Length: 136
Image (cartoon, rainbow, N blue to C red; front, side):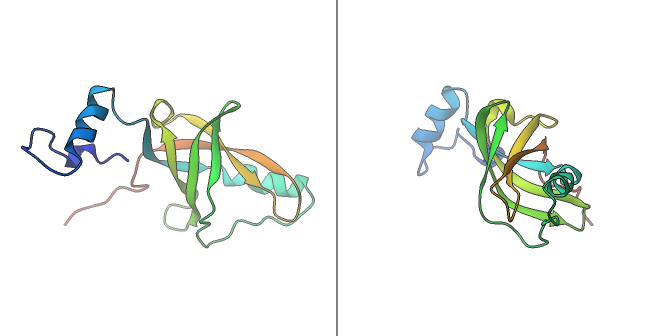
């Protein structure tokens, strides 16, 4: 989940060390936690094309959504929400490591509420956190 910098594999002993060392020797984790910046304008247009009012809630959507690269599922999006702080539709991306580089273009399965349609909304993989933090 991107927390490898907090683990010291040279430490003598700790719970889970064997599994983490084996994972590290095999190339690292198969999935990582990344940010997703979902193209909200594209979603609004998809609603308008379906002749229905856009439904992008300011509340966190806890239902996971499939993330794809081309036609292949490469992970899941979770905690999708509109962020007034960064003025973007953002989510956590639980992605295959090969697709987790910042700037990677993916799509998120987006259900058009009130219809039986699911569309692939464009999204870009981003670094976490979504905004730079200034320290005092």
